[in-house]
Length: 247
Image 1: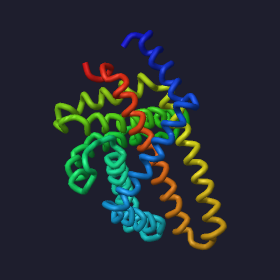
Image 2: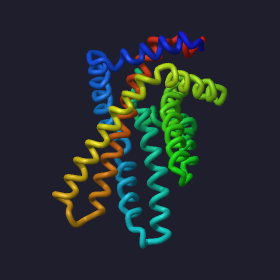
Image 3: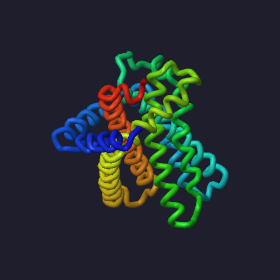
Image 4: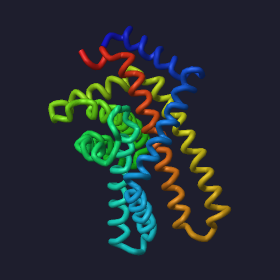
């Protein structure tokens, strides 16, 4: 991609965050989020209950092996929940029933790649930690968009690498706007965490377990809002610049 084309796309991405446009995108994201929540409660309420139960178990560090099993199991199920949430917010004319979610389960392959960059984040050096965090978050966002591209493909292995390439291309081409929208979600998560902490302090002043569950609800809500926003931006950018991704 030529530098002039990239600069032009970056300028266009900043147009997305202008109030008139961003207001519509955020409202569309909220509507998508609400619809996805209804689907998740209908088909995956058991997954939400399991995550919360394991999260409670993970809080008891004195439990030893049970604590470790509950902790890692909750992480696995959390990622499974986020993947199904991506399917729920995915733009599609298909009937989103249980068969729909089962049919696209193979898309989990590419979604799980989004967590790999965070494995680099074990360095104690602050500068290296920050660098790995930035790289990890960038690739996480790319893999979210790549997952949508893969779900819209024929779901074969030969479509895996092209989908990853398209996801990275989308994020890099519209990086300034995507960064700003992700910062908006970040600030929303801060506000949610503050409200959850306030509720935990005022209402649940003796049971740390409940506070932990409330914190998990905040995390699931924030992740869901991010997935909904990703879906809306994916649809707008893909259809507006189809030739950029498909030659």
